[in-house]
Length: 454
Ligand code: HEM
Image 1 (cartoon, helix red, strand yellow):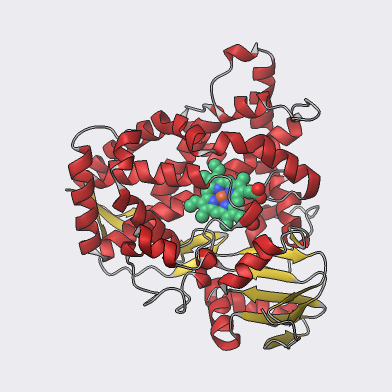
Image 2 (cartoon, protein in one colour; image 1 turned 90 degrees about the vertical axis):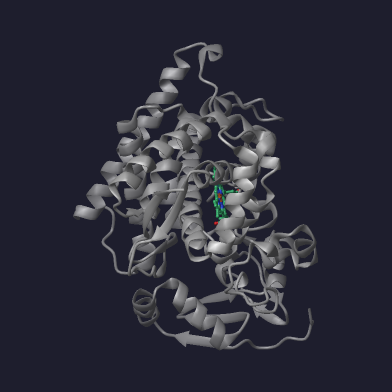
């Protein structure tokens, strides 16, 4: 990095409205992609007094997430998420609270710890095998974004609360999604009614929030009324039993609630979207699908997958990693500069918002030859080792890297092995998905696919 200062190509706007309209028309992904192509790896948008930088180059990813991690935090950019959705949960918290919570929760997300969820994942994989058998007989397309979201929501709710009842899973999923939809539409639309105005949207959000909070508080209360050795062995019990190293304090009930919502929020839609795009990518690349099927058929035969099987399914994992490259479920994340910085000679003022964008870094031709080609061989160990470490950041990077990345990869590995053993998916005739970001990566016109028995 040079130390002499330079100015950066920038786009100026006095008010947010013209940019907001453009984002609404083109979609967030296209808007930032065209900004990147026009202005380069570090572009600046100036909206009134607010400086926004789009950071795409892997060196910038490292600087923001690792080298200068104390400068870049989650402040103004996460205000709505904190206030309306996740409270003090890990995704939006900062400073001493975040450090304490991350330390308390990290042991529950190590590769070893997430392996304990294998029976839940395998049970739900078997449920989907039956569900897709019926769908294959009917021959009607299924929307994969919805299908995968039903599956991962069930897995995370069982892992967290031991919730088994299907109707409970359905309404909790629906209510949390109402909350998420509310927050992401506020973020996209600067003109929204304050919360105290009883618009239908505000009312639906407030109702959903009350129901979700009451549900979680009810479970916590029930457990507190029983001796801990009778609690189910799920994530909530582990969080309830965790104690701060220094003070010996447990988490408060409101923190337990916020962390539970956070894990549900962060931990199901992202994995669902990854799996949905994986089925789509396989349908588009029969050669990749054939290799995947051969690997899985040789290793699994008719068994339910075990940890040993997974070790023998490296190509399956390569397909998952390649899906996360071209279709990163979290296409962008933001940081706010708490102090001035200079990135690659460009001054970054205090308060600047940094948009860090895996979706674009993962398509950068300097780091990914033929970037739009879906090629799981990029994930052969020797190729992976030769690449810039921060050219790939689907789970962010540095200290705030996704705490659930092991959970997600483990869950995806098991589910792909189980479902690809029996089914092959095809794109619904005449349908081409339009990539679209609505909080996570999706498709504006859905992702209908036909399921057939192999
Ligand atoms: C393919 C699946 C997933 C993707 C692509 C993904 C991506 C990410 C990204 C990019 C971040 C950083 C967000 C930011 O800085 O604003 C993040 C944070 C986080 N994720 Fe994930 N995630 C996935 C699955 C999961 C799962 C399964 C869980 C929980 C079981 C989870 C829980 C979290 C939490 C709690 C954080 C906040 C961590 C912190 O700030 O300390 N995620 N994730």
